Image (cartoon, rainbow, N blue to C red):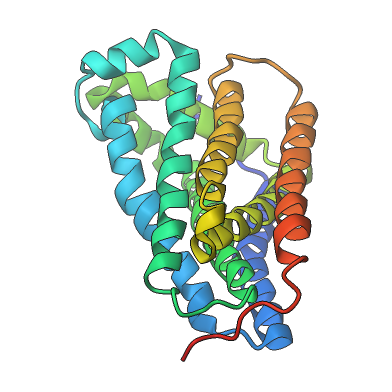
Length: 285
């Protein structure tokens, strides 16, 4: 398949546009918010750094070790074998890891690095950093890889690389062919879906940040933290059910459900917590 594959100019163009969008949009949002609210840029950067630490450095290796050891070049073990034989439970665990790690990261950040910043804007600043950095690192980096692969496919070096990989790990052929299929058929519609999804994902992260912020600021509202873990887990559990083909629904139905969920979490947190806290507290120095 890879020997005869070719990536058209339009596909490469939309991949480049996607890379630019995912790199620039979070930075523009952060800049506008900082100028409008005069918020410390450090709060946004802390949000991004905590996401990087808890989601990528801590969560992913542990998740892969327990759920997908073959992705790390390791053999399946008792836990991974059991979970892969029970796909719904596997999807639940795949959702629980980001829910637990990322929301705990928020909790630790608000309890330590940001404990003196009591003003309500801190919650949104953190959410912009967390969600924005995710956009830059996850789809942004992925699209850069796709662009590199596109040129390799067109000049024939990708086919050579595929042969070498398949000789050592034949089970990787299906995954490689899936990536090639995505790149060669990439269109404006694919980009639009990805952009649509990521915009509302940022709203979700802002909403979750508001929940955890008020859980830390008021001990009587601490249950907002496990609520954030639950909501995050539920969102990623649903995504995993679709990814693992446990539920088969049209992509537009999936996206509509995700959008409604993200908007609901954001509006619930914004209207019931952030908006009611009009005065807030003076930031401690």
